[in-house]
Length: 64
Picture (cartoon, helix red, strand yellow):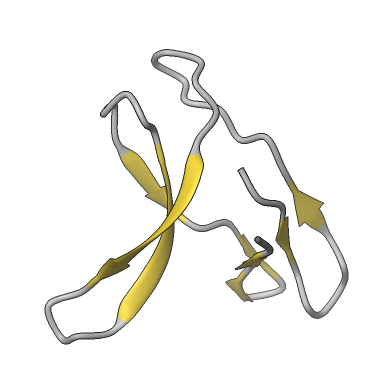
C-alpha cells in the first residue's frame, strides 16, 4: 500500500489494514457515475473499500 500524505501539514499514513480479515488495503482509483475518479483503499479479499484518508480538510494524496 502506498503512503498517503497531506500536502498542507506533511502528515503521512501507511499500512492501513482491513478490520475484517487483517489484509493490508491497496490504493485504487474508481470512476464515479459523472466520469470523475476518486481514490479508495480496498481490501484485496473483497471485504470492501473506504475513501482515501482526509487531513486538513482535503483528501490525502497516495504516493506510488
